[in-house]
Image (cartoon, rainbow, N blue to C red; front, side, top):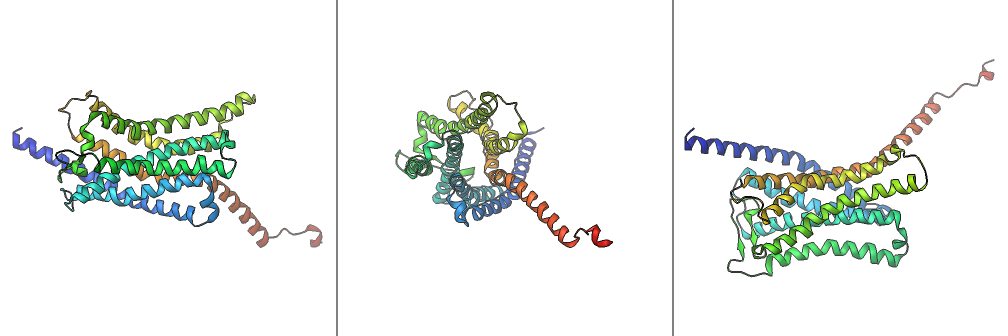
Amino acid sequence: MGINETNNSSNTEISLSKSIQFWLLSILDIPSIFCSLFLLYHLLTKQIRRSTLNNHVIIKILLISLFIQLIDIPLYLNFLRSNPVWPQTLVTCIVWWYATHAMYNTTIILTAWLYFERYIRIFHNEYISTKIKQWLFHYISIIFFLIFPMIYYILVLFIPSCEQQFIYDYTQAWCALCPCYYNNNLSTIVDIAINSILPCLLIALFSIVLLIHTIWIKNIRLKRVVQWKQYRKMIIQLFSISSLFIIFNSPLMLYYLLYILQYIPLDIDPQIEDYLNFLSYFSTLFLPFSILFSLSHGCFRNGCKKFRKNFRKHRANIHPKKNPRLQH
């Protein structure tokens, strides 16, 4: 095959790949937005749901995910449809980069805190038994983990100075934006390790510890036989959310770490990174459905019981049982 034929074949493959990416994200993004809005409406419209401590972190995660679904993913879809980036302004590149890094990592950090707090609420509820303790442990912690990544990435963007403040390319996804901060390999490693890799590991760790601790307390310590049906709901709730971040985020985090540590050759195909970035979008797209499923699992079962009870009552009113004594 000649050089021109090779280039044409390569361009066809890239364009086909972008077309598949575009339609996959388009098909999933709109339902994901509606699901996020539905959950936020469900959690915010009633005071009892807003005031429930378990829902506070979930509401913050849904709001940040909605921001990603409305800003980051549409910009990526527009890039796939009409490369280069549009509109071609530095502001677009900065907003897109910020949504990708700050919002995305904030979601992972808050999810890790959600699992840790669930463990504390189940096994050490005395830490949040009073209003003061709730403020110290619950509210201040949420505010810190919510604000810290956002302020951190604003500082990363604008505080470090170098000869060329921003390096960007409108023909690349996310404008290939590279702030001065990332010229230092050590700073990049610290950023990825603390804000991306560590939270993913903590999500997996807290899920496993919570599950094992529950089984140990109720079955080994209390000398009972393990009944796995009793833990089915908790297992679904734990792993429906945590598995998203582990499956879809870990490959990209591992790739970045290996690249910085120079375990990946410099001539590696750059499309690999693009595919891993594309894969990481699915954790955000499936997150609202996972939360909906975990929240509605018990509600659905209770709703079915209530429906059956009302249905039987309705049938009894329509077809009352006849007293056999009255027939004679």
